[in-house]
Length: 219
Image: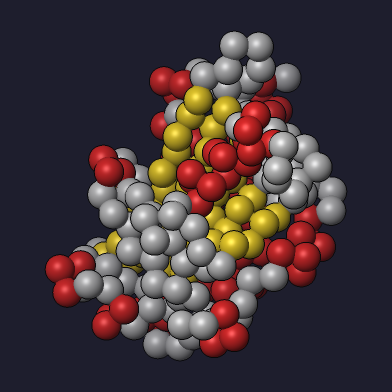
């Protein structure tokens, strides 16, 4: 699918305009393609990436990176995440939550709960969390979370929260071996979903609850 053919295209400036005073979303990058958004955002956060990246402060938490297509999206335990071009939301968030590396499960639960909350309130659907990192609809996977943390010696540990949400896929967009276990919002609703509006809703919810769950508790 060419960039011009992608429905409800994600435009960084349009998304970022909704988060001028937010922590999550103060800077938004949209790539046409990435191997994985977790790897791409980690590169921006590294000293080597900082010299050539576009954000003014790559290590500041709240940076969000979307990719319209992932060629090497990852799930839990190294499983491949299928990322049909322009059909879902594939993004990662750079955070410094002030928790230990072995406590990263708190971020996974936080992200899954937020995804469930948005699906419930926006679409009147009833998702369910499947441990360790899946969100289900009708017993089939609609979203997943992959949290990766990096220890820092003189700063709060770096956390990358990768999120994938199946939005407008049809059954045929999934490989045959995954069709019995995967679902998209469009399949559940029997209509397409505006990915831009969904992205804004998810990021707003994440920004609000991140402060409550991590920042306020740490102070």
